[in-house]
Image (tube, rainbow, N blue to C red; front, side, top):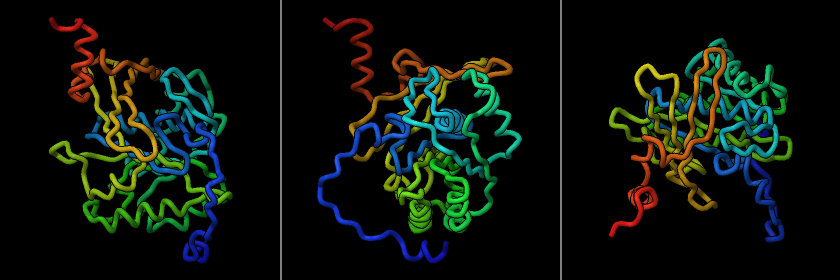
Length: 277
């Protein structure tokens, strides 16, 4: 394992003849690209970890649900948890599965409680990938996963380089979903290298009335590579006691519309009230 890690990737010839199928670029259409990291960031208790768990359930089972997320195929998933414990996460996954109408996960989500940074633990993670055939990673959350000061660009770059070195049997880097945080001023916390290395970067916002069993959650794309800009995605999460359901919601009809770009809000107002005379 250590020898392979030090040797790195082989040299290959690029002759411009590979025409990759558009659907093969995505694990989840417009959310997670194949072989690349997607990062979702927001303040504490904004619903970003729950959304990551919901997406992991869809991917591990290869289903779409009612949230308007198009999963291309089931992938063996490993959840790297720096935040909670296995009992709490398993209980939440049980509620999500009931809401999706599945009693048990066909492709179980593997779980690992983490205390070391990705770069410090990369040899073990590479071994787990080979042993279990891991195809998709969820990392919750980035500041702990970097194993050092998140403001330090070198620490962040080492983390992403280590993540890139965890590859499938075909030599493809794992697709991943990374949860991250804002600081006390609600600004994305840490080095700008986080934004540079994430292929897709979404800001997560939440709206919830007091004592309500419904959460409205929005994802707002801030950065993308190789794809057009993606419209904001809205979700309504309903807690039903013994199950949790997630459905797609139009951002412009929710309180989260205030986080849309000004031109889009103007267009929404014109379509709602008609053109001003």
